[in-house]
Amino acid sequence: MNYLFENLGDERFQELCQCIINTQFSNTQCFPVGQPDGGRDGLAYIGNKGESTVFQVKFSRDGNNVSNIYEWLSSTIKKELPKIKFLAERRNAKAYYLITNVKGSSHLDNGTIDKIKHFLDETIPIPAFCWWRDDLSRFLDTYPLLKWSFCDILNGQDILNYNVFQNLEEKKEKRESVLRAYLQDQYDLDCEVKFKQIELQNNIFDLFVDVPIIPKEEIRNLSRNEVKSNVFQCIRAWHIHSKYELDKVDEECTGAVDYLLSLNKYVKSSKLVVEGGPGQGKSTITQYICQVHRARLLNRKWEIEKIPIKVRNMPLQIPFKIDLRDFASWLNRQNPYSNIVNDNYFERRWQESFESFLIAHIFYHSKIEDFEMSDFFAIGKRAAVLIVLDGFDEIADTKLRNKVVEAIQKGYSRLSSNLLSLQFIITSRPAAFANSNSFPIIEYPHFELSDFSR
Image (cartoon, rainbow, N blue to C red; front, side):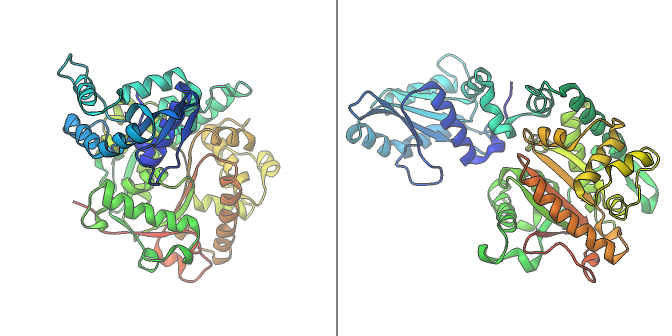
């Protein structure tokens, strides 16, 4: 199985490696990430004389495409050599393991695996070994429960076939049927992008062009103390992704899809607002993001081939795309799905809450009634969830709009406390916030779209 280690980022990857070390060695010591550790990401103590095996983790943000693997790893080892010698001479280190997400090559003597082993033997004063990408993959194949703690490394079919449904014997087939039917219906509805102004429609994967996204000026430079943790983390993630992952000189070149799909690498749960003017692409962006996730989950190989490799390897989420006009009707005790959801179901299900609407929304698209909030939680405890709330500006009634804001805030709070990972993306025109209660900027980071990138 191919695992997407890059989705973890350097700190989570180190934690994964520490877990693998614990499966292979006894008397281990795992050091906190992000602190000066003297070249020790982990230790395994030997006997009672203070002797140990030292583990060091080296992460590449693009482990499958390092241009010169031997040069990268050998130079890395040279930089760490003084620490390794100190540990060997002064701290009783008896063996050294280098662990990386980079993929080695197996050619006898001339492949990177043999060349690095020879370099380690010649350079390191104690027995030294390297665990490569394939070694880590085989460890995870051997200890399958471990990968569910790091589910960002899994691809779409793995999520559906294993992470969501495996070991959920009770109602397993029902949950799978509902979720597949829901995803397929929304996939069919969103497979084309429509340009209302010129009455043109085409496959979204054929025409989509990303749009630059930036935090709104009033929050871009706020300090940690001025905003809620979620806002600070989202803004920090935007800066990190722009500077270090995309290597952008101008951060305003960061694409909306690229940023929003990568956010799960940095923030476990998040809620944000994306603003854009008429025709600027805010709804198309979220449509595209949801279609990327659906294509991967449904294993639509032909469509997946059209998705850029970097985009298709982003952390996977189960997407739920909601028209906020429908939710507003629900809160007003009007049935937005009357052609499918009959009055009896509506009256039995109706509550003035986001969750009750969500279950009706899933029924409407899946056409399968037997699905409860407990089923949603069971799935969401094992896979990341994305909920897109589209068209806040299209709710005309100010009082109703205020009710929508309040219900979304309460719904997010309840859901996020019960799910593995939850992301809310709300789209709107900027003018929608002028004369009504809105999503507070200190809790919901507001991003705005710029002109189309070329």
